[in-house]
Image 1: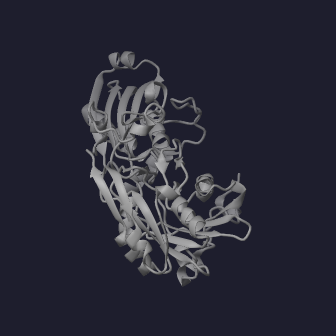
Image 2: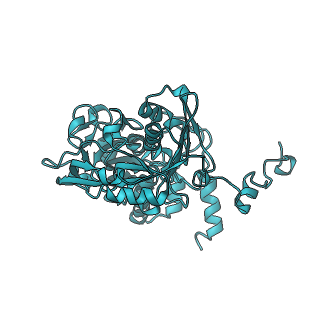
Image 3: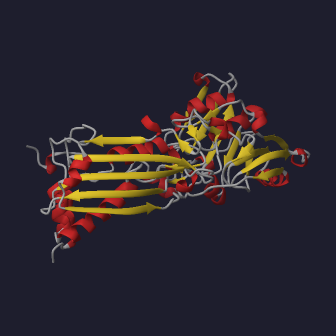
Length: 431
């Protein structure tokens, strides 16, 4: 048995490889990169939550000397991207679905000129009814946001996510479990859309090469996963698209899905020049994603001694205007919404609703923060109802090595018991 001091690396503090560059300011982020002949991009974002695009007039912008291009959906191929469902256009097509969606994008010789040109692009809208609460979006008569995707990705505003159009888990017999329970608690919870806001803004640099290919530098955390979408937008084989991830100045999960890469690549193709698109903080707040808001009903049954017997939960997830990672996030809610506890009877039903808000993105925990909040508050309520120490209630029901989760996955290294003991000791629990 090795002790910690016997290792040369494990258990010892080591300097970060990138620490000197971070401290001295020599690290190169996308915002720091410049190429000869590079153009600067500026987006035109929607001022409406839900509206039909009647016209886009870029003539005044294009009349300015030094403006090379004003791209709209007319310049992009008929291709939509997405993590699970391809429902997101490079630039808004026919209508906008949230305030902040990119309608057009300018490429010019300087950033100041690009800003001026973007301000001259005139977009005429026909405002449409909007819906912002995912529960309202699922009601009869709600404005349909993706009328062109009905039956493929959506039914009304419901994102089709699994058998019976929702994500489900069925383990044991919850009705029997509740019948055998001494105490049953049922409560509603909701979580708000939180906004990740890294210090580094979203930025992309795209440059054509001499061999008909394209190199894209991106702030993304999962940059290669975007390659197929960039290749489709510029209509190149993936072998001709090179994705580069320089240092990333914070991401928190938000930077693991498609962002400004497709439109920047499109501008580089249209102008045959390097193009850099760097969003301002305000533009990032409008254009990029938030943590998914969720609305829960949890029902928990237990014996008088604190043994958990049955758990039933349903959830409505707001995915925003496009699907993005909503199915992956909501799958975690459906399959692991019982947390780290051994509960023999479980039932879940998770619906995903499209709304006229920003897309939902990953953020710190990837689908586990929302149900964990709901369940842990409910566990405290149960402890109070039983007159039981909430720490002991958790330790009584927690996973142990060798047990299986509701999905059948084996537990091979459960650290929750040790973690709870350490927290209890450090916090003076019980005193």
